[in-house]
Image (tube, rainbow over all chains, first blue to last red; front, side, top):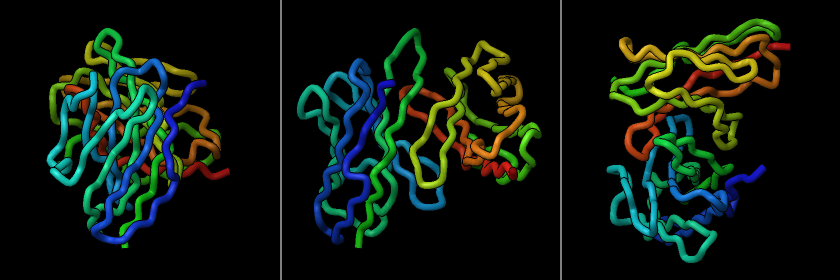
Amino acid sequence: EPEVTQTPSHQVTQMGQEVILRCVPISNHLYFYWYRQILGQKVEFLVSFYNNEISEKSEIFDDQFSVERPDGSNFTLKIRSTKLEDSAMYFCASSEILRGHNEQFFGPGTRLTVL
Amino acid sequence: SQQGEEDPQALSIQEGENATMNCSYKTSINNLQWYRQNSGRGLVHLILIRSNEREKHSGRLRVTLDTSKKSSSLLITASRAADTASYFCAETSGSRLTFGEGTQLTVNP
């Protein structure tokens, strides 16, 4: 069964460093998403992406964040200058819009630890 | 208060029993989805119920939706130890999912 994959599974970085989290969505899906989950908290929406541009973003997704689809398969989330509070699990998801459905399929996540 | 609030926050049952989790939401939804998350893992999509549906079944799962009360319930029948996980409802509005706090279900063998 097709699945969303994410790399790395765990990323440790120093505060102020840039990180890029990578995702390979399901191949025939058209919408891509990033969510995060701070330890012990609920999953929060960051951004959705369609047709090479951002469709929607939350208030969390500030200028420190950017997304890109650099080729036909990868979808990346870049955090320009990481802060301690960026430590979280980051989940990528993808969906195939069909008759207004928005069933999203999630990857296993990247655990980001900012020291 | 928060959107997509689940109750109870934690539920512990014996294998074979049924588990019912409830969710309330605030906005007008396109649909509502339920996800499962095993500890430290990703989210697994369980079932989607559209705003014009009242009940949906998938295997041992039964989801109901009451748009007048802005609430949904997830029933897992004949629970198994492997059902131990956190369960979240998520409102769909636009392209985003808004998740609740989740219910931690523990099924004791």
